Length: 168
Ligand SMILES: [Zn+2]
Picture 1 (cartoon, rainbow, N blue to C red):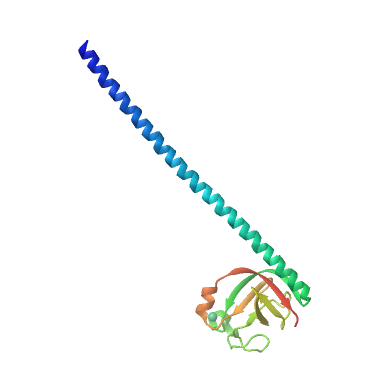
Picture 2: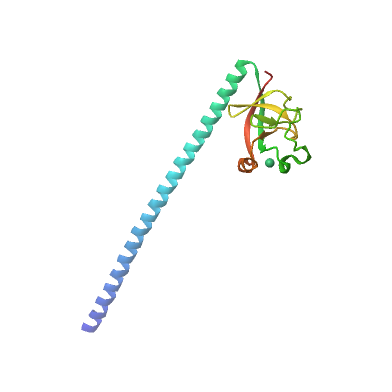
C-alpha cells in the first residue's frame, strides 16, 4: 500500500511536471505567435506605406505631366528605357570619333534617340533634367544618355523613366 502510494506520488509528480512543461511550451508558442503577428503587422504596415508612396509618386508624375502639358511646349513620350554610353570604342564601335550623328561633340547633356520617336534637335526631359537629342543608335522608346567616362556608363546600367520632349 505504502509502495503503491509512493509510486502514485512519483507518477503524480511526473504528470505535474509534464503539465508544467506543456504550460511552458504553450507560453513559448504564444510568445512566438505574438512576435510573428507583430512581424506580420509591421510588414502589412510597411506594404501599406509602399503602396501609399507609389500612389503619391504616380500622383506627382501626373501633376508634373499636367504642368508640362499646360506649358504647351512639352510632349509626353512615355516610359522609356534609359541607358548610358560614352564616346569610347566599346560604346560606339566604328562611330567612336567623339562626334554625334548631328555632328555635335558627344558629351554630357547629349542623348541618343530613335529619330522616329524623338526628333533630333529636340530637348529631352528625363527626371526634370534637360538633354539635347543629338545622336542616334537606339530604336523605339529608348534614350541613351552620353556620359564622359566609360565607368559611369557601366554604373548607370539600365532603368526606366518617364520622358518628355520639347521642340524648343
Ligand atoms: Zn564607353
